[in-house]
Length: 201
Ligand SMILES: O=c1[nH]c(=O)c2ncn([C@@H]3O[C@H](COP(=O)(O)OP(=O)(O)OP(=O)(O)O)[C@@H](O)[C@H]3O)c2[nH]1
Ligand SMILES: [Mg+2]
Image 1 (tube, rainbow, N blue to C red):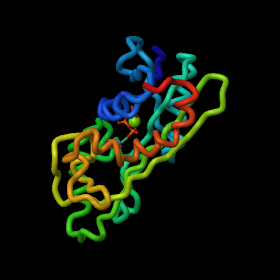
Image 2: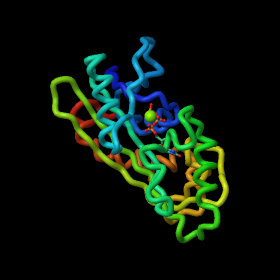
Image 3: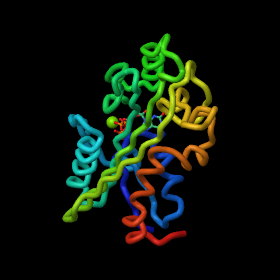
């Protein structure tokens, strides 16, 4: 079977991607599945697009294979769009989902529900050696809860109510999240690219 490499070390993203790629005959592998030691690509960009391209190009150049990278994050209006591209490092460099979401809740203390609007953004970059790169962007609008709720998902899922729902993303099943998520919407825009390369199941 064909393989596609996702230039990520985030296992939560991979759970989403495995489901999102399920309709296609392709095996998805993350950097954690590749035995070799690949360098960490520094996310020095100031936009999701720049960082997604840095990650995809960095790995595609080394492996000389098609690579997809995902740069994503949470934008909270009352925090001026933070944590944004710094979502993974919001509470410090050592990446801790729980500390990150606690920091968002703390910074939103006293803010009324209707002012807690936010959105998840996911930018996907597809880089194939010798071909023009493809970028897609998915957005999931919603609101930040007052307390963490639910055990599923990862990252900020326990504090995010998607618009029109009264459960957080972490209270939804993986399949439910994948119907509405930012990652799903970015993947949907890659449909034509995917169909030219992989048979449907
Ligand atoms: O609750 C969430 N549900 C999601 O669906 C989601 N997607 C992204 N995020 C958060 O946004 C940052 C991404 O940063 P990011 O793109 O740099 O990824 P990362 O550093 O974790 O892995 P890598 O892909 O760079 O290796 C991280 O803090 C993630 O927790 C999410 N949180
Ligand atoms: Mg990262």
